[in-house]
Image 1 (cartoon, each protein chain N blue to C red):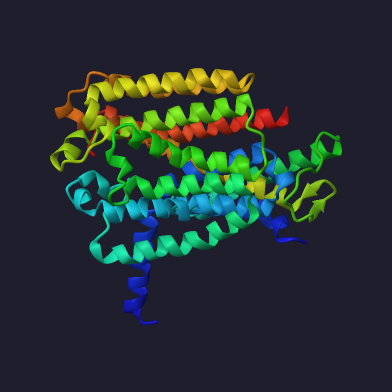
Image 2: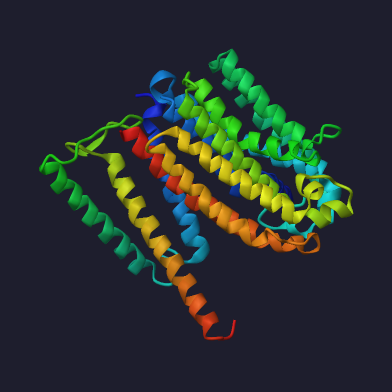
Length: 116
Length: 298
């Protein structure tokens, strides 16, 4: 195994780390006042997409491809990296959702001429 | 390590990272990585070259560019409150030596590696790249103070990593590839020129030249708009579907159009356009990525 096999997994972990930094800074999800609720939403999303993958692989729509991967498979055609990709996809969506909701709320407050 | 030294080390690290402009890291790493991948570099050259090249253009390259710039610009930066925010940390004199040392120490190993894995063409491009970075702010050369050359040099900072990526991947400089690079170069010149508008008064006050002090605020904005349009038109020559990137020039023109009659005395109002530009780049980068994925999958 060459170190380049770890590149994709490394990039995913790096991107997840970046999401965690934003989360930590803005207190959105895992670092919010309700971390358990945040984690539950994140894991539910991940589980749904994982189920989607399993169904799609079973129906021969998806198959493993690409390089720079560890080659570790959780199930046939389901690489380890896919789990982290789905986790990232859900995390980035929830972070964007949190930031957008906060931005919209601040805008609405300003529009009403509320105190700042 | 005592608590005091630990504190000093973390302050130094903060200063060095801050002066490398983390918000701009992506602007140089992405052109390299995207060009390398699109030119078929992964198959022909390798993932190691991609990763180490991208890391080089992510941090050390920017530290060399902005760190040296901050050191050499110290005097004029002191009089510019804008340089304390997102665009950088005004370096206090005591950090100058640390910054220069860090810039050289992080650049040399990467440059040695990139020369070793490259060929004469890629090394020539890399030399142009590093020269443009140093010449931009180095004493005597001071390309940033020479109207038009300032915009061209700044654009070279962002386009040359892409040219280097193609050269390192042994990619061919075909018509569409050249069109993409020229369009990108026009975008870079326009953006630098517009960025200089907000500093017209501050630069003139300390006797610094730029494309904007030379043309004045309104004419610089118009020149930048024209440059964006030319860049967009050149992108049409990339063929389908690359030509869709021409549409991405439109938001840039629209974004700076409100400043086309800006009086020099009001130049700082252009900062609102600059903040919008920083956001626009993130959205545009996303759309360019989708386009590149489409092209790669065809």
